[in-house]
Amino acid sequence: MSVNSHDPFSAPDSGPTDPFLGDPNDPSKLLDELDPVEPLTDTDRKEIAADLAELSEFQAALSPHGIQGIVVDCGDCGEQHYFSWALMASNLRSLLGHGRTGVHEPAAEPLTDSYVTWDYARGFTDALAHRS
Image 1 (tube, rainbow, N blue to C red):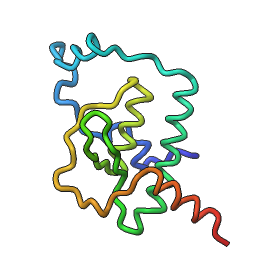
Image 2: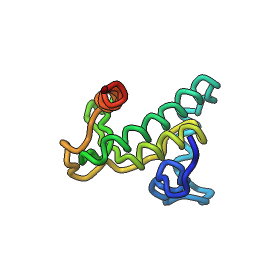
Image 3: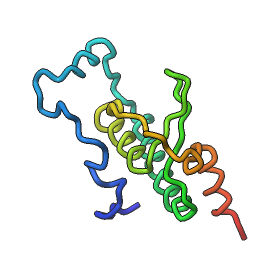
């Protein structure tokens, strides 16, 4: 897959800017002490890179149908979280670069019908690939 400068998945800054960026007193550094980041294995990196590629396919196939991103069931809070295509890609890139995703605010009143699960998106793109 070639990197396109207009591709939101290749842009390093498509996620929200960290308000503590460059601050030596960044309170998130306390999280590293409480929950240290485990280094990613080569398998982890390959799987995340594959997820990024798959996400790009999902966006290309589903955006023309009004789908704005992915909905994820959160194991921590038990609620659904809605991620735009760009935010999900930013989170995956953050995993590759830092071993964890950045902190972000949940979507405010998302149009829930405009988001699909990863499995739905995979099924949709698989169906498109296998149609005659």
